[in-house]
Every structure is written in C-alpha cells, then in structure tokens.
Length: 144
Image 1 (cartoon, helix red, strand yellow):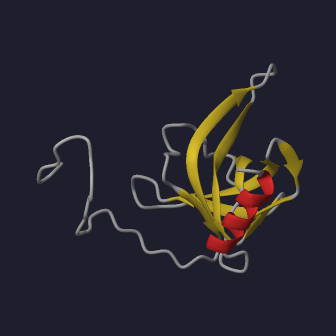
Image 2 (tube, helix red, strand yellow; image 1 turned 45 degrees about the vertical axis):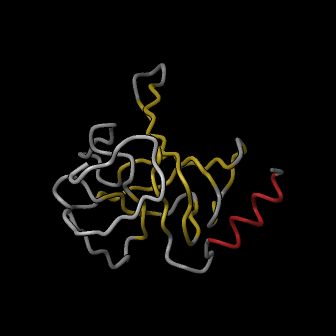
C-alpha cells in the first residue's frame, strides 16, 4: 500500500475537526549524554490535531488521574513536523508541565491517551461487554 493510499484510508476513518486524541502504542526513554532524558510516545492520532509547544494531558494513570505535558517535538513518517493530524502515525517528545513529575515507562502505559486539557473525560476501570469471536486458533472459554 502506498503512502497516498494509506492517507486516503486514514482520512476516511478519522476526523481532523474533533477533539485531539492520541492513543499511545509504545513509550521510549532516551537518555542524553548529559544525564537528562526524553520521553517519546508513539501511536496513532485518532482525532483532531496536535502541535509543538501546546499543553495536553496523558492518562488515565492507575489512580484515574491525568498528567499535564507539553509536546516539544513531533515526528511523522520520520520527518520532523510542527503538527500531527488525525489518521497519522506519529511520535511525540513530551515533557511534564510540573517539574516535580517524572515521566517513565512505569507511569505511561500502552493504551493511555493524550488529550486536550479541556477534554471531558469519563474513566472506567470495569465494564461489561458482549464479545463475538468468529474465528480464533485457540479455544476461548469464559473469563479468558
């Protein structure tokens, strides 16, 4: 699939005009020679757009709270950019707004989201769902 075909698919399934939402797929910590470190998030921009220099919130953490961060760098398709929009796979370098907060792999997990500061968020830790699996190579039982 070419780059342009992928973008057509992404643009058809994601909304640029919605509230910013970035779903975290992986977290990397890069340590610089001076001892400082950078927190790098990779994932998919599900909706809206993200810009360098703006503040957002990451979460929810284990206590259902969000941490305020600012984006210091954005990369899309290995190219540095000022913005990332819905449908793009991107990497963000983030820094905590509060200097007393440390960002590391223990407090940023796969599946967390980066959202706008004013986002109306409801956090659920338990829910019921009916799941239909039309085919799976192993046996699936209750409580699997």
